Length: 249
Length: 249
Image (cartoon, one colour):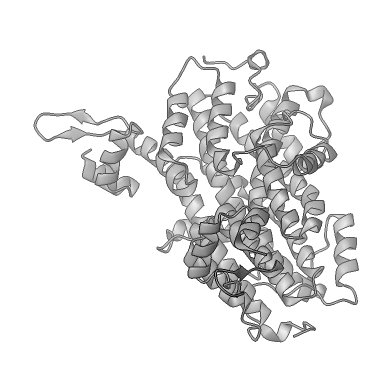
């Protein structure tokens, strides 16, 4: 296909496609005589992969090139390739300086309390976690740090499925692509679902009657101890003022 | 305190502080005679809040201003204020054009299957979810779409705690700040924990013996059906080549 068709198929402007080719993120098409360059399905697929990283994951071009170079290194063992890709895709979260010892310790506690032992305690993701925890502390939201254990429980559910998805793939390139796309789009999907779930949960708190039983005991008791007697949390994002009975203003 | 101390306390360079004041994200300090401006604890707190949004959430300055303006509107009902803040903080995920009908339907199915009914079906987060789903489809990863239901389950666990955190707060400003910070830092924390959990889960798959029992039945059977006989998923990010027995290369 011509570049116009490639652009239409992928939603990437022709100028951007040419830029990606110059930047080495995409192989040039096949020259067919004067001013004719042919692109194939490989280009479509690769372009969508690049797009997912750049547009959804906001991965810098240089990092995208790094990930793609790894993917194209057939002799590299897939384990280290996945490692490189994962680090490249997470790097925007990893702080440049070592986090405060106190925050690193808090992050490691969360990992240990969850019974996690495989991750190196100086892994970039531990640093990223410690960095976020430090900001929570600075902002006087230490109680959110205590609750991070529940985030870890949820993260494990997601990770189980992430790994299942990889296990369903046999081909090396497919595994790598699924990992890259799954990492980037998985974050986006979870963020959206978290926002939606917040709306649902807050609606339930206001309609105790219709409320589904909460699976998690400790949580339900926690919710009750917070909500019983006291006012429930504000009903989020619903614009239904009559549902709000907040004291203090 | 002087601007130098404010900068030291918050880790924000003096030039950036002045920029934030010019941009209206931070009130100017109190003038005390010639070349002396005093800042207080309110400035420290506000600066950290701005920093969380700008640095961690990558929220554009204009959006930060929007959120802060809402927070400072004491007469506005907290429900709509939370809505404005939430939209501002999620906007980078919401596509400009309406997603394909097919993807919107897939997104709504996930919401319905989870038994969620409170969220408006054209909510920005539904659009964001549909957008991500569309990219998965384009990339031929439709099976990831089917699994998004488990993501929703995990998102509900996180959302229950997000709401609990708000319910622990009485003061309007505290509720709003906890929501803004919790949204931005919560995403960062979950991303890090997901990466860590992937390492842990993949390590477990390789050490079936030491593997903790999986709470979720459907998952454990799914994992088993995938892993039994077949090769397990690659052991992620561990650089332990000897653990890999991948066929095909």
